[in-house]
Image (cartoon, rainbow over all chains, first blue to last red; front, side, top):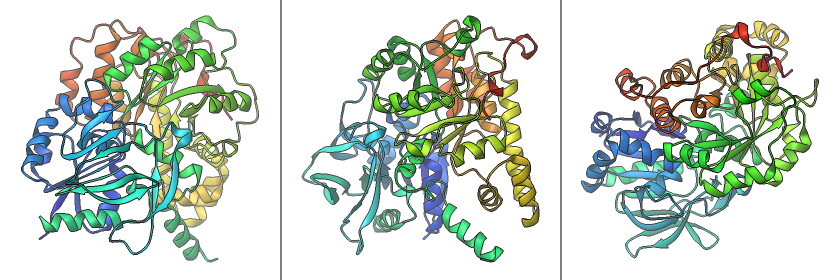
Length: 193
Length: 310
């Protein structure tokens, strides 16, 4: 069955995600309103500024709509800022910043430093035969992992790709490389549930 | 290599804008990608920086005077005091940008040393070099540069800019020049996609731009790096206008902190930029914002900053 994957399009790298999803043959639409959300079976939350997205999610009524879909088990994939939005705890965020608590992790914003500290590296990913080239941009770091969370990749000591049920998160940007394997894992997860 | 082979290679290189780059250029174009759909606000002190972040800005541009004041004061406008840039960096969690003069690579070195997230080689400051722009490949930090037309945009990309902004006319509160520049850049991109392979040589000559970059546009229909809009945006409708014309994000300089009530206006412009095609949202956020900055007509300004840059 063909499923429609929405990409949260309030701000950030949503077009880059759509490009990868379309390359995989998935139908992808932009989600800016609660009615856009009703049309999708799964959601990607892109990188961008989490403070901006958190603000816009509340002004357009999407926060509660997404929250209720997440509680019903809608599969979701958050990268970078998207991971911050899905985390249970956010460290070094703004006091009014809200997150969905969809995955039992704590995340520290900008933990890797400023843009000058942004980097790329090859990482080993569970279930992938070859390393994945990961791009980290002012990246957040997972600082605590709940017992129900499966770690799929690490960089040095830190988890950088993780999954709990139908929620998948990455602290890097798989949408910025020509490699669709991680999006493909998410599409696979979508078929499981 | 035959034409078909060349086009094939270019397609492989540019399937996605961020993919054709590697090294610092990939993470730098990547940061530009993350700023899409957002509003970058000029701020002159930590209090304004907080207001901008609270309103949902994706980044702030730290500078000593907004363009409207630079225009009023005259004299030479230079890079801001590092102390003031540090003060702004200390109070916000979003990226901080700062401006260097055109061609002033030492100001850029200083901004990189300060750990500024994006360096704007800006025509709003007084140019330091009337022939050369900064060789941006010599830096790790990303650069944004202004452009009034496609040739200028491609020259800046060939020098290593990770992001282009249409220049508009800073400090005027008048969107007319921003519209002119966006239409020129995006219109020529459209026209190039209709050109045949022989015509591309003439396009490169007319634009004064490297041929491979012109051929790439013919193939992909877009610039290698994101294009944002700057210079004259004062209202939520102005921001949405720029977005509907094809800008991928907006810079707002004097338009926010030279208005009567900056905080609600900043929030409204953020919302208008995200929902730029939704006239109902635009109508809602445009209400009761107080007076925008007064603004000036193009026939009343004594110097066009957009003419700075080569």
